[in-house]
Length: 351
Length: 111
Image (cartoon, rainbow over all chains, first blue to last red; front, side):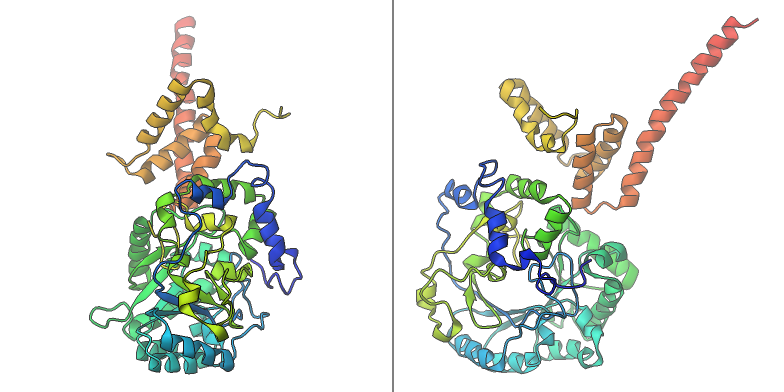
């Protein structure tokens, strides 16, 4: 597991143009594998266009208490990019006028933004119906000041979506760091204790599974069944759904693929598993992603590749949904990650 | 031409065998796909059988393929190694059971 972000290590891959170059050269430039653009054109799905906007996904900062080896954000304790209250105020202006019904807060560890709780409270007042917080779980146990997060989540009926790569210690710790499994288990029990995933409370707790290596996730329902049985039996933990998410070949996961000599095989596997039916449901068609500094992207992955929306509106301060909805979605070869097999999105499979 | 008999990159070219005999190649792949579908045995069980057989027939391509398949299915490494031992046990058993033939022959030839 990495201990520092690519950025802190001055790794070449911290430059997004370097990543995009890798994703467009080699096996794609040689014609061994088709470009994503050509692949979706086969079924007349190019250019990819937005559908009804449903989700505003706001990345409130890249700071995180963990340095997971597969992180597409390159998050970590050494990342200082944090959304300011000024940008949050601009987000609130958007929340008041948007047609989106869901606010999806992500990071880094979104809870580490010092204005996180203030922002949630203000967004609730601004009329957001569905709140999602993508919590890494361990943050709840990281420091006393976070111990009451389950109560805070409950108060605002926040839908908690948590990363949990496996129901066994070994794989979880290998991907996310020593001790992460035990802390995650404790945090899940705390969430259950305040009522999450308990009948009649309406408090939603879902888990995210992503493979701990250079392979694709298997059947989401089967995985969910295995996770449910194991977590209940071993730790008396309940949760709602399991979302199986494919690791996209960018940032630290790309670094891992290249270093372990798995990059080409992984890209082959993604292209081989390409499912044209999954294209219609990819999350960039119903989401707008907002970065810590207010720029607009088609999705969190494009944000990490610094591919801003292809629209004359590119920043939250000039937000105009009607204009934005006319844009073409920016794609590259990393998009194969969202269309492999049953597809992959922040809400799990799509096809 | 590769200077080694096995090249890991050849695995992903497996489908190309149909290019030189379309009819038999596609019949094979159709059969292969059907075999691994869920039936009286689950896909998971079939994956573990395939892994064990891959070792017995010592096919490096198959070992790569079914180790990865097992990982994707969430099959634990303990399960995978047990499957390999099942294959190994049958293979060593097959060797050793011929020991009876040796004993028979020995006895027959001895006064």
